[in-house]
Length: 235
Image (cartoon, rainbow, N blue to C red; front, top):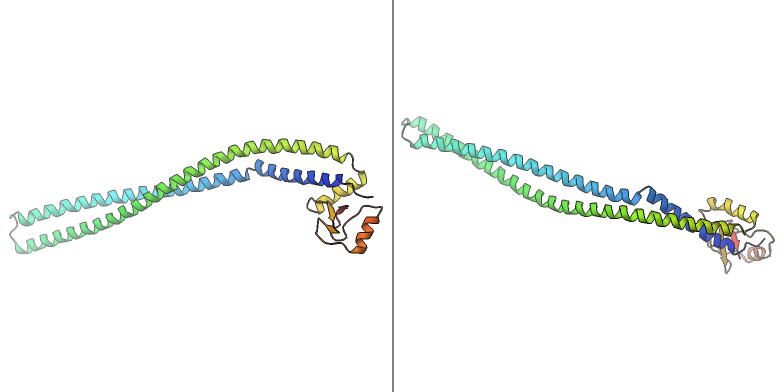
């Protein structure tokens, strides 16, 4: 039995249906949309972490500013005692001077710490601005994917209906024994059960048939099959 050329047409339709089915499953499973949303959510989380860091820097900065103000007032009060004339005892004056120096040293240390906090906050604020722009872009992209996915799903579903109608009409005209073998082979051969034979080369496994096998295939009354991959050969 020579496989008719319609079998290759059926194979082409089945390959198209397989591709459309896979695409439909991907769209229904929202693979691309889920990935787009995951990227957007990750960007949102990163932005949230940066904003929390800014809040922490603000609290630390406010605490340091309060401490600097307090140290400034204390140092001013001690200097008033030092130079106000109310204290005459040299030992007590030396103690006050030591306290003034200590307060000013602590104030200077806190000012250095505040400068570091402000610099770090500025850096994080810059990164947060960039992260916000990136998150916005990803949110917009995810919304576009959602709309595109819905439209594509409708188109794929409609094409599947058309292709399956074509398949039913074509399969009705193919010998039942040949069609049964074809249907059995498809799952075993990754969806490709029928292939052409071009210049003695199987278009499924791309192996060249020996001259003896090629002659046998051309003369057979049964269903011609590749000696290597066992797919149905359409001469």
